[in-house]
Image (cartoon, rainbow, N blue to C red; front, side):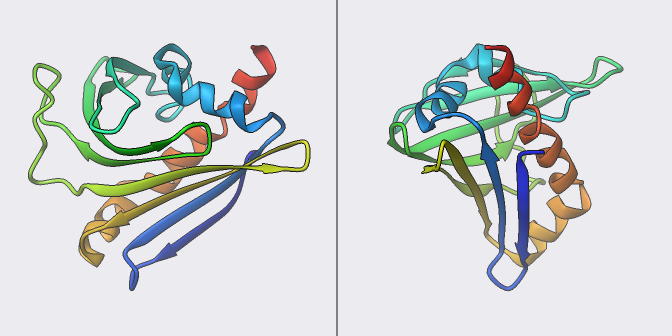
Amino acid sequence: MPVIDVTKSLADRTLTMTARFDAPVERVWRIYADPRQLEKVWGPPTYPATFVRHELRPGGQMHYYMTSPEGQRFAGYWNVTAVDEPHAFEFDDGFALNTDDFTADPDLPTSANTYRFVADGDGTRAEYTSVYATEEALSKVLEMGVVDGATGAINQIDELLNNN
């Protein structure tokens, strides 16, 4: 399994997940740069994602929804703040009210994220860091199952790398 470490710090309002992939940094980067590849690994395995907007550039936006096994859609967005291709990108991540205009849901937490990819021998070490505004916001997403969901999503990357 790619996820090798999960660190939660309520005091720092931070969740960091570390993974290792048997692929070069540039190949891992392409997953995030290509919306069709990203759809295969964003979200838990039983909640496939659909990206309807994908702009991986500073100032860009990403709009997506995940579809439950029952057909219910859960919308989200990224506001991309920085890109250092192929090594890292930063974005604000939040839940959206709907898939019509992807308006932020004011009742759910947002996070500032940094995804970093570093060469590690013959593979890539990926570090996914999310920082929340408050301890309560981090606690809420932990209660919502973010660790299990993100672990399931990240662990799908190996299959995509092996099949493409």
